[in-house]
Length: 74
Image (cartoon, rainbow, N blue to C red):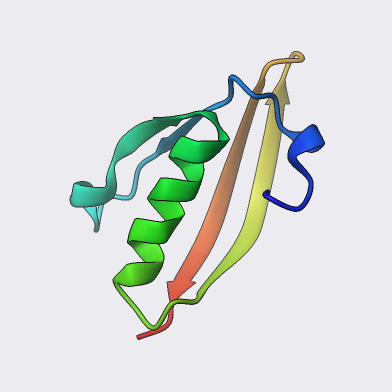
């Protein structure tokens, strides 16, 4: 995201939910909020995370829901 910030609106809100990691459930505002979230997630492992998109749904021009499979290397 930091390499292509023009692809994401500056007022973006990122909602994260994972039943097996409720301590990470939150809503992040703006690119800096999303960056902080991923910094925290990467700190739980060796610094790398693999995110594999499985499905995506667009609802109009303002909402996209993406189901992913995530793998945090430890």
